Length: 121
Image: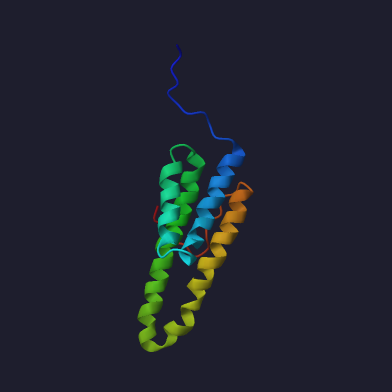
């Protein structure tokens, strides 16, 4: 009886579907508090071993989430000098726009690095 030590490689469409879901799952915070942080991290951690391509997308999303936290913290500090009120809208808008663009690019098979995102992972 032959042994199967590895799972068969995932089809290209299946990988693209999960990559797109990973990016778009950031929008879950509109439905559930902290859902936009938890959902992408869970998808990344569960799927990265089965589909190595997902690891790259997961790193991109995780880098953006950490960068977004830094930007929002900076804006919160700048609220003390009023300018934060005007600047806070930029990262909030990008937190809506970037996941959509990332999801579209992922569905086309591309790994799109979010502009302005620091690379920690």
